[in-house]
Structure formats: structure tokens, C-alpha cells
Image 1 (tube, rainbow, N blue to C red):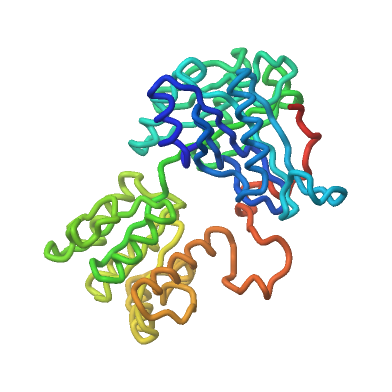
Image 2: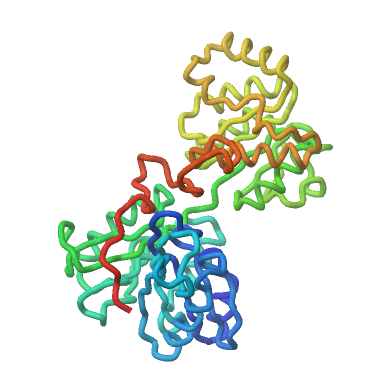
Length: 391
């Protein structure tokens, strides 16, 4: 929903009704992950996308029907070898789409959800998408910092989903949870889609140089909340980094240590050290590499700079395990030279490390094109599809 929230709120604020189609399950090589959404406005215009164009037309028709009837629906789309012209995914994947009508009457809490997302406050929306009692399909439970709001139909269900959704929100994961009709954890019959809107992941760029401006642009493009930090006020200005969410004048190691102490970094955080100066980058990397929760730490420099930096870090007492976390020289080998090309190589390495890619051309690989979440997070795309839901 986050990717269509602006369009959705424009309709909600004027009292209109929108059709919201959301990817809730994916199997095999699906084009979009759970949470991807498409919104159909009352005038028929469309925002967002759910499959890269494969099934949007069919979902559009279903969304207009749901807007008219007010009855939510789940529809599965997949590839059919029997009918090459059937509506489905040419990639061979399978997706389940939940379609609902959104208005002030059906979702009065949407304004509060939008405010939480805008202010980087964690919020999760749990929606019943399958249930033997159709009257319970579409019911919502919100998990906000102030607690749980709403009901899914029973106290037992609310308690179970609240506990499970809190874990998904903490991990930033969006997925479908299964229960018995009254929230029984070992039961079947009810499916609840939990859309976890964790704050945007952070990218901390240290060193206010031209390469930093290009990296900040790439970070913003990828959806990061970008901070540029440098101890030199003449260089660290908002005018030089217009795409950054904030520009901070401070010693890099001191700023990062304060952010860690405040709990403002996590496993999704990317730290890009572009300072090129040992008095900045060595103390900064000491802090970054000793912090176990930072997901990516990379440092720019030549091979010679890298070797000198590693020597200083070992002298500072960092272990081999800590140093193994450092991406240095930063980025994948794309052969680029300009700040923009270098920024693309850095972004590519961050993506590869996040999803487990190895940076090789896809023409030299086999198997699925899209990687799934790390093994610790059971990937939905590797699961066997359950029975098709009813419309």
C-alpha cells in the first residue's frame, strides 16, 4: 500500500471510494513481492502496479466490480500451458491478489496509518482475506505504537494476530498468516494478510563529496531514508545534496555512535564511507564494524588505501570476523568511473548483499531470476501453493 498511498489518500480525503488490489502471496518467479499494490480511482484512473502488466487489466475489472458491490475478493493468477492466451503471468509464477473497496466508511483509520508512515513510525495493518464467514473478510486490526486498534472478529483472534504481527513489524516483513476460524494457531480456515510498514531503511553516507551526491540519489531512488554526514560545514549543505532527507554536520564516528545508541540503525541500514581520510574513516569504521546490527558497511578507496585502512583497523583491535563484514573497495566491479557509475556499482552491491546475489550476469546463471528473503525468513516464493482461494 505504501507505493500507492499518495493516490489512495487523495481519493480518501475527498470522500471517494477506491479499489485497492494488493499482492498477498507469491509463488515461484513472481514479478512483484507481497505488499505491491494497484489503486483504481472512481474516475477509472490507475496508480501503481502488481505484475508488470501481465494481469493488470483483469485486476482492473475485478477492482471496479468490488468498488461497486463492496464485497472484497481474493483472486489467483498464474501461468497456464493449456491456454497461452489466458490471463496469467508469463514468468511462470503465481500470485494471489486481494481486492477491497477503500473509503472513509470502510477504512476510517487510513489517515492515521498514512501519518505514521509519513513520520517514520512503525505500523502494521492486519486484514482478514479468507474466512468461512464471509462477513469477517476485510476486517482489520491496526498495530501502532499506541497499541492495537480494531478487531478481526473475536478477542482470541485479535490476541493471536497482535502477537504475530508485532514480530513481523519488528522484522519489516509482510506476509499471510494462517489460523483456525477463531484464531486457533494450529487450525485452518482463516488467512490474515499483515502489511508491515516499518520505517524506510536508512542509508548513511559519510563524506560530503561529489560521489556522495550520486550515492544519495541512488539511495533515494531505492527507497532509503538518506543522511549525508560530514564534519566540514562548508561542504555539508542541503544545497549540495538536494535528494538527501537530511544533511548533518558532525564528526562521522560521533554521529554514528549516537545513532546506534538511540536505536536508529538496524539490520537494513547501509553505511557508505566515502571520506577518503584516515582521521575520519578509521574511527568511523571502528564504530560501524563493532555494531552487529548494521546490514551493510562499505568504504571507498584504492587497493593501497584499503590495505592501509585494514592495517589501522587491525591495530585498533578489530577481529577478522568484524573486518570480513567490510565491503572495501566499495561496490561491484562494473568498470565505471564517474560518480554516477560508481554510485550504481555501490547500489548494486547493497542489493546483492541484501538478497544473496553474486553480481554475475543473469545469462550465466540458472534457476529463478528473483532471489527470495534470507533463509532465516522462510521465503513465501519457495512454498507449495495452498488450494486456490475462492473469489
